[in-house]
Length: 359
Image 1: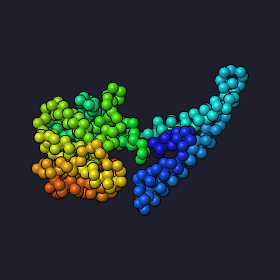
Image 2: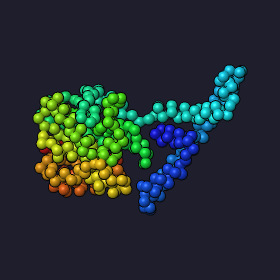
Image 3: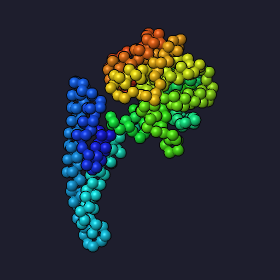
Image 4: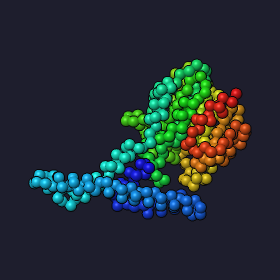
């Protein structure tokens, strides 16, 4: 809820309103489709009602504090007192006093991947960085005995703040691929590999731009950078081969990587974006014009052992997206469809058993 609260409160200060957002979302994403449009419109109405409810509650809580603050500061002839008696200063103070509790609320409740990172540290995963030609990539590495390095590639992360506004930081709030890495049932070395610009700060964010987690999320430069990082990790681990796994967009990246490399022993995806054209058409979003399509390399992976896990209850990446890829790869038997698992759900509860079944 805090992810919605602060942007909406802030826009109210800039004299914007929900009517624009609702109209924009319905026009751009629904394209006049009946049931989906009604659901979308109703969703934004609920958010709008929630916003005004929170704002009213904030006014009640902050009102007394604001009045007391003005009374104290306005006493005497000090500069703060004279300023507080002006309308402009009072207006600014009002806005700041409304915004402060919202920011504090957001800071306390915003989703964070920290618990998962802490869990990884307790399991013996160490943070590492992979300097590539274009990016510095974040990773978590767990040593092990074995000739095959298991690489888990993260999904698209927090790519969008709103349907029409990309985020400034794609670090995932729900790092599913990390939890899959923690659930890996093998005893060999394991690497969790974040996508470009995830989990990095300061100078490590070199060359970061919105396109790398939106239209070019599976672009050639992204795949090349991931390929460089996998090679570095493989050399550090002393492994002979790699098994590539990926969640959501990371599944598409894993497939594209598998087609580039000659040392891949296995390909596994969970709710994988394996056909960008079919996915954008189904979701009624703009084509990923600067990205490669994993479907185009499926035929080159016919001889590669694979596992593609998907769910009928995943509305973000429905099973149909992987169906075309598996058919093109001639590996329809590699597709496992489950029930009751949403896109960002606890896939790690299913993963160890399914992976242990593979030859």
